[in-house]
Image 1: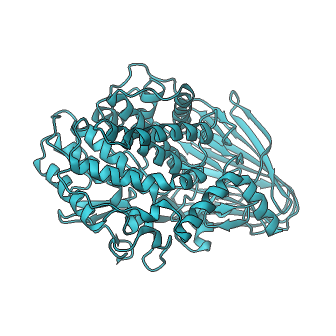
Image 2 (image 1 turned 30 degrees about the horizontal axis):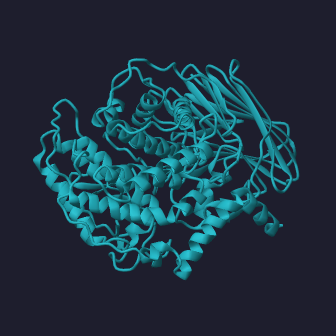
Image 3 (image 1 turned 90 degrees about the vertical axis):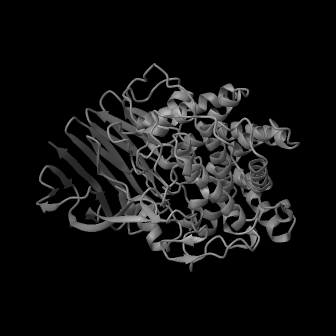
Length: 606
């Protein structure tokens, strides 16, 4: 059975994509890949000339002055020195400095831990913060930029060491170099050192971009955007390869938008934070295009950009800036031009809506306006209509709004590989608080049990049959036997939605959701082949206790009724991860039955 599931999964991934990935790996192994023959000298500063911009009215970011920031949740003191580019501060261990070619380094090193921690300072978020401080009169900020960039170049010679391993990481550096130049007002005259640094990165990105395309995710959009931005930058100063890189980047970015963003704006990665990463990437490409006076992107690409911005608008709680902890969350916040929190999506939303829809998402003024100002772009006068109840059937989302409440039903529409087993998960927000929650991700580099507790069915508000996952896990980032929703309905006027699926073992779950002004009612009908079914509700932190057929924290109550006998009704301790590599305890209600029937849950608040 597993062999058949694997074969069908390969077909679902797309045989062309499978071939791209196989060719990439074969090329690295045999030496046929061009990337193995790349060489370049380490770039030498100065990297940025004197800033031609002076800002007195914009508050600069204070991040990265004297501490490193990791995934929006942890800081490490630096004592005004550059970061250790190879240190994992979570484990205290380091990878070797840039000696070996990047392609000789293993993807996962259990001794050092998650390589994403190594990569984080090398994304150059600190460059954006220092550029803001430099144009507001902080003389030390420009010296910091030059010193840290030179230290990075010296310790990460081209194509050597872990920080050259990922084409997307190289792409993020290119985009951040360009955005820093926009903030400083030096983009029109890049120094020789900066040109050398950008060129080395584009030469790293180009030979492996087909591998990025084969992932059908943010790798392709990021790398295409970097080629477009960096290529057009170099073309403007007469680099012989610049125009070709720019054309390739533009073509691939439009291609990726056509394929990965559905007509309703849903993105291939089924994730709120990856949707933000997409929009930040597109916003940087568009901001660069506007400031440089380049030709607009195609009409169809611009439409997809607008739809993607509207999708995020529908998902976000405006009062907090947060939204459902939906799908994979790797800690990315790609355009950190403000000191607002990691889980505040409003800066991305305001920027994307202004650039792609020509409207403000948020009428009032706030830190969410700063990215446009720092990039030298204006804020539209027109304000978008407040988000209403809406269905995104291409992606598998029903969003219901009633007063201060927002509920989302997630159902399986998998044109692209799912990263989490979250079929029929329900998220509930009341007055800016997430009261029924998703577990998040925690880390990609953990044991299979931890991976499943967060990304598997156990990390979501849904039904688990017979202690198994909704789909069999075939790899760290791959499920098989992708689910398909049936009997999907949505009524925006009455705030109701429903969907059903049958899993690979023959168990069926049908869920209907109704959002009222003071309550959420969820009806789960289970049938088919199973011996045990457990309904889980992941609750907000608080003092929860069992009261008969309910749990309550004093002001809110979740009540359960069931046609089948309930054999277990228990509050257990679970975990959630709102930030990458950070986790905290939460209470989880588990309701177990061993026969088909209807289970009804009602969550009420005052």
